[in-house]
Every structure is written in structure tokens, then in C-alpha cells.
Length: 195
Length: 254
Image (cartoon, rainbow over all chains, first blue to last red):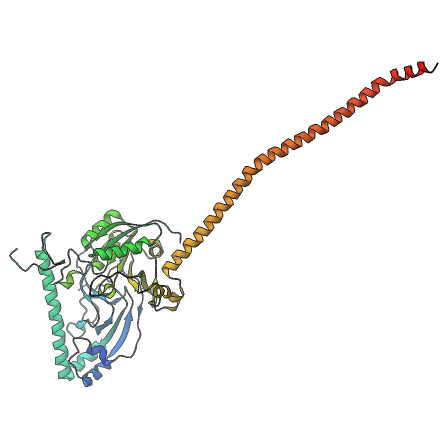
């Protein structure tokens, strides 16, 4: 597997800055994956997390890197990009497949094998993240069945939601035509697959 | 850095956003919007054909068309930016990251009193003008990630409290800098025009004055010459009349 070290040679400006600040349970409660955890469980999670800050243009992690941390976005916006395996003319080698915003989780490869990031995360704005150490978190999930079940349940909901959106996008692009109807000032996905 | 004409291209799905970006570009001296696009495909094609100096793209630009039921359909802005920066290296590409609910609110697009572009650099949020990020001022093919800063009032804009950097707050606001540059330009231009008129007037007035002076000098010279001539004539006249005068006087004395 070819390791892509940079999101794009044509892209980024900015330096990565890391600051550690006090993290509160509230930050985890607002994330869908950790919402159902109790206070005691959140206390254990707090000890595994550090807060980091990245500037616009920074790459939080690169596709193919070892997935060290599971990340929760606290503010800002980041684009998840996949590197194309071939270079196409007149087209960037990186394609955006998702945009994550406040309270979204990214980098779940830190707890899912084979523990390599499958995307590159590029900051579109200044971003604050909670970075949860992957190795210690996996150990916690194994040792504490309750935390393990709640977290994996929440993660599956997130993954399912993303999968659903991606499928809808795929369908819409296949069905799209210049004659797609405009309804109420906004363009909606055509519901008749026979068109 | 000397200012020069700017050819600017805009890309956003929404006409109101394009109007806002057009207004921001219009504040630059000599800037002209040469093209607008509503999706990523058109934006890249337009950039290749127009080769603008600056391309401002909404980060939530649809690749082809945006669908409300499919939020992921509006994530082509960065891709278009990277493609343009790769295909047209001379174009400075700016991706604006907050042209959605963060700026306009969920109710819809509402006008704001004051806006400016800002970017993050070395931990600070700094306002900037398009001239400052032209290709020769930054690494070629680098994409600039920017935000639109909005202010609820002119006073807030002047205070620039939205910027979290002390130096940025102490900097003059974009509008103040533009206004002061204009005032200084008008003042120095006026002084230059006045000085030029004064010089021309002096030259215009000096010419007849010189003529009069020359004429006067000529008259004086003629007068002096005439005086000298008269004196010489008198001398010569006296010299020729003296022997005749003496014989007459001797004849009268026998």
C-alpha cells in the first residue's frame, strides 16, 4: 500500500500547533459516540485525551499513517480526502469524500483494524480536537465492557449515517441530469429510480 | 507592494454569496470580477480559460449540483481549489470556509453591515486584502484558507474585536486603511496640481515681464547712447567753430 505523505503538493500553508488544555466531560457528552456514557466512564476517558489545535490548511493526519488517535472535533471544519491511485489530467489527486464539523468523530481507524488512517484530514478552518490515545483506548474498551459496548454502538451509528449519505450521493450523481426538477427553490434527489 | 489591477473569479452555489464575494473584491483598487461559477466543474473550466489573478471559492461548492437531501453533495470547494492551483499556478486560490450557517444564519441569507476577509497565520486571525496574497507574495500554488468576518455595526468593525490577535486589533481596519490611503492620495495629488499651476503661472507671467524688462533695458541703453552721441556732437561742433570766433573778435578790437 503506497503511503501518501502529503495531501497535495499544490495545497497547504500553515503550521501545526498543539496546545494542551483542560478537557471537560461536557466535551465528550456533546459527541454522539460518547453521549450514553456515565460520569464514571467519562472520567476514565478524560485521562486518555488531550486537546490539540490546528490551523487552516494543516493536515491533522495523512492517509496511510499509523492511526494513533481517535479524534473528536470541538470546533472548526475539516475535509476528509482520499488520494487517487492514479494521476488524472486536469484533476487534483485528492478528492474530498466528507466534511466533518463540530462534535464529529474522525480517525476511528485508531480502534478499528488494521489501524491505518484511510483518509487525509485537512483543516478548512482553525480546528480544535480532542485526541484520544488509540492504544490505551483499545485497552480500555477491552477491559470495560460497558464502555466498549456504548462506544462501538455509537461508532456504528456514525458509520451507518456516513454510509447512507455516501450512497445517496452516489445515486444522485448517477441519476443527475440537467432536467432534474427544482422543487421549492432547492434541488432534491429524484425519487423515481426508473428515470 | 505596489497595487495593480486584479482579475478576480468567484465560485459559490448561491447568488447572494457571489454578490458578497464580489463586494469584497470590489473594495480592492483596480479589481474587476471577470467570471462567476456555481459549481466545481464550471469553476475549474472558468479558471483555465480566464486565468484570473485570484479565484475565491466557497468551500461548500457542489461538484455538479447541490442537493438538500444529500449534504455530501456540497463538498467540492477544496477539490476545485486544488485543481485550479495545480492547473493554473499563476492564480492565487482562496477557499472561504464559513460561507454557510456560521455567517448567514439558518434563517437564510441576511445582509451584514461590515465584512472583511481574514486568514489564520501563526496562531492569529489577520484581516487581509487580495493584493497581499497574490502569487508573488506567497509560495506558488499555495491555497489560502480564509474566513469572512462579519460585524454587526460599523463601530464593531472599527474596533475589530473579532480578531483574537493583539497586533491585528491594533492594526487599522481594512476600511480605515483604504480610506486613509485615499485621503493621502487626494492631499498629495492636490498639492502637486497646485504646485504645477503655480509653476506654469510663474512661467506665463515671467515671459511678458522679461519682455518688459528687456524693453526697458533697451530704452535705457538708447538713452545712454543718445546722451553720449549728443555729447560727442557738441564737442565736435565746438571744436570746428572756435577759429572763426577768434578772427571776428580781433577784427572788432582795431
